[in-house]
Image (cartoon, rainbow, N blue to C red; front, side, top):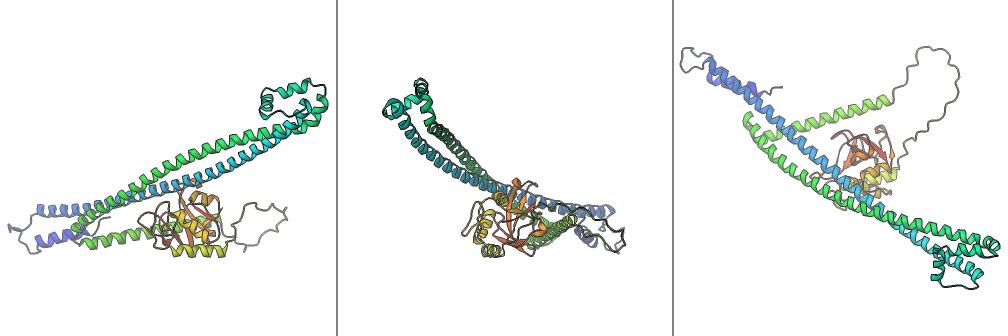
Length: 417
């Protein structure tokens, strides 16, 4: 759509250069070609205005894309750190289990050695001799040769089985510990790579923000010149335009969600018309789907109060307080105040909570954004504060904020801790 600048510029040209009483024979009067040129200049100015606005829109889109990429990389790093923490826990547990199994094997092996060798040899050789016998299968040979093997073997079968079981468990535990150590090493390497990726993405987003800011300033100066207004007024108009677009997008997102909720829960049929008697039917099986769990109002209230207390504090990727936050760090801290432990990773927060529908949202619930319907694509989380608002730490340059749940793009997942 052409801006009013076309008519404004053209009118100005005509009023200045072509008075209504001008004599066509007057050499100073504008010719038909002069008028056409003026029209083309006005048209060209309007084209420039629209082109500049398109460039501003493209710059904003580039900034948004860079910011989302930084969010995704930052949450990927949080995920890598969380997996590393879990891998190290598993490694410590496997190491403890391996040591326990080794101690158990040593005890069983000692008892088995004393009992069997005292019976067959008449005394207890040292441990090295006994180990050599086991390694060379000497004990089995000894049992086969001895005349009393049938009696002794039955008597010591239980201890022999206990030894073999303990030896197998110790070997399995040792292997599990080695595997867990390898997994932890891989997780550490992944975390380091994710950290580098996040640093790179955050730096790219910061560079994009600086570049876009400079580009928008240049474009707005050009726009102000074309429209014959001050730069301050051009900036004010642009801010109002972007705010209007955001509000319109929020309205459309809200309407879309309402339509989806109505489609999922259609109104009951109108029963005013007379109907035929209904034959009794067999009772149906109850719905096995889990309803949304009741909200822990005390914990939820504490979580919301905690999040509100952080309003205005800066976003810092991978931060979890006390005076700087990223998205999952804030929701983790909020629900810690509410009495529940959540990991510092948005995907894991969703996986450790109960999924709910948008229509079931209550204060304290978690609202997620992902790049697809898969939970693994989640890269942002916010705390629902009630009345259609959320509290969240979005990105670098924006502090912890309370705003409409539809301020941006529609959420993709909802859950209750």
